[in-house]
Length: 483
Image (cartoon, rainbow, N blue to C red; front, side, top):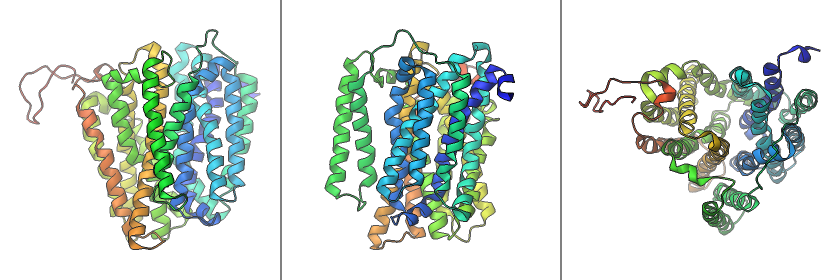
């Protein structure tokens, strides 16, 4: 058998890649298909933002428990169970008959995804010799890069020429293959000494995060009364307040807030979250605008929006030399403004805009956003000690998913407000202009968090050095060693 002949540092990542590819493609194809799904379920396209926020939020709620479950029950056991849950959720999504069904099944998918991807990475780190880790992770990144590129065109093609439900059914054979390969080739590694799960903290953080994001997501919608949405939001805020008090008193809190004492980690979480709010809005708002106001088919829309991921793919080969040349501080500050400008540039698109120009803007925007993500992700762990690394990873993962959810919720609120102000039910092109500009402005606020960092932040990682000088340079900055 071919699989048996592959070296372990290639075989194990490719098995994990089955799950990662399934998750990545699923996350991107649905964005392109939202208008068609809304029409099929006889619901409002803006209300379909709940399908995105519910999945992302489910990831945020359950990711903190993934590491503990793997340690307690074994990585292979949890990994296989996660694939089963994700695949089951996919089947149920394909059988949905209402928005409520669809949202509930997306939450089930998120439960599987929350365990599937983090535990999959853990499987690699524990199954592959240290000398082969870099090579193994390189194999793992292939589906992470190809999934978002293939997702929009694939989702658009299936939705246009077949049926959107098929999007979820294609996960079934991939999931079955992943389960079979994991059973045969992955060891069930577990830890001997596992601290107790912070169940109290997990419940508080889950209620807090879900209440906050879901409350904001349904504000202005006709799904629930305004007072109910406001009440859910308030419950979320209160629960998060209780969690902060709990985390300060608990040695093994599920989300370790003490990590925020580290300046680079704090900037990565706070600045990165603000930046991702704008980025999270794009996969929801752009396909809606292209299909509902430009009149494009899902396939034509997907053939345009995939350019963002293609730009991100191109960036992967240039991130290291750019960071070495300019350093983290300059890249984070300047590139956050550039990336935010490209988010705002979506407001300039009209049905008469040449498709080549749209692709060019999306391609460059994807490039700069991916560069920002690379810098944020690397710098966040620059000063985290090895014993704190697993807790830092969970914290960052949760922050990422929550901020992406808030981006979808925010752009949905703006679109709903614009539509309601006109007293109409259909979205118009003019509704999207303030939506893109507002989320771009929120992303730009990340600059203030990054500017608080020392100029030499992350110098060890980037290799960026400057000649020491006490004189201001022509750009108005003071040169110091390692900036």
